[in-house]
Length: 165
Image 1 (tube, rainbow, N blue to C red):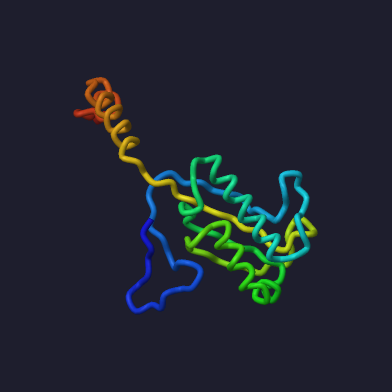
Image 2 (tube, rainbow, N blue to C red):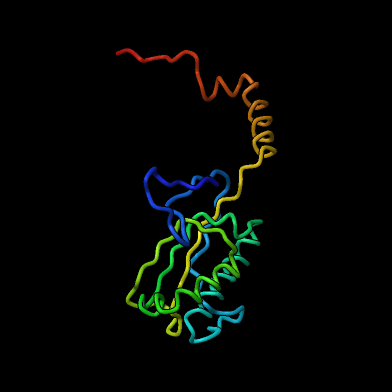
């Protein structure tokens, strides 16, 4: 992934303005701070955020991705003041789970979340790198298909007959 920062813009802290990525995408639904039994782990904002991030990492692992493939995070919080008051602790929890990888991020204060006890919900999008071997396999099979004359005849006719009245 390549960080995108227009010339003259100040370097952001804790996020990126934009990322350029190519490959397969993984979309992770909003995760809250609950465990595998769907029980909210704590009433503490930081603990919930850390668990939500852990949940994201576990889901990414199922798709063969690691935290450094996250291209975007969207945070939904019930109370931005609570988020800001715990920013230092949330930052430490973030680095503990995700590391020093800062994708494009947005934070939105919402009126409420579906789960009553939830204070934060985080969505993620990750981009798995495009591996050359996938491209080679695709090119080889595509070439084989294109070499068949019927492919061209069926999908790319050389002559078109236009009916005349």
